[in-house]
Image (cartoon, rainbow, N blue to C red; front, side, top):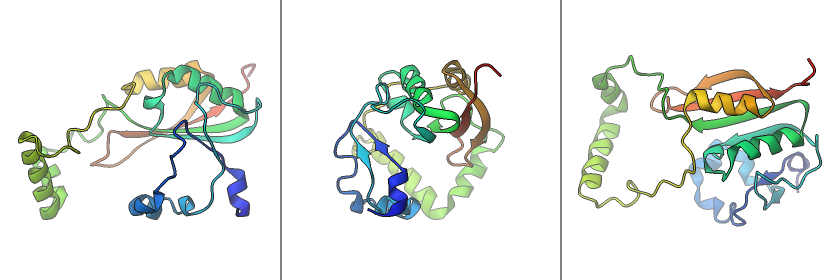
Length: 185
């Protein structure tokens, strides 16, 4: 195990989370750290097996909406975080799309010829019920609006420091950086 991997712990109740990761070439390009050995622990976010104030940084990307109870998961993250620790949440938001001023024609032009053909082809397959991947079951337990996500974060003892909305076509994806602050200040 390399020295840097000892600083991270990946937690997931799905014990096979890293199985066949070599098949996910795009993810490996985007996140080269996935090529390194990882400290992995099978656990649920609502009941973390760590001492209080153990971590400087907690990263929850595309998971908060899959938890059985996001409120308890964020309380546990707060419990496990040191004072001043950061929490980064990345999530798809249902209500606030920041590119609404862009016309649909502009959006289609931005796809490029290949993207436009792929978009039309996929919509046709979906209409014909031939594309099973396009009609996957929704495995999300929750769908957050911008305001109820911020309220949830703040109600669990975190202070929001910064928000970042991705650019189109992923303008529905929001990253919120929060910090654990001393409640007495």
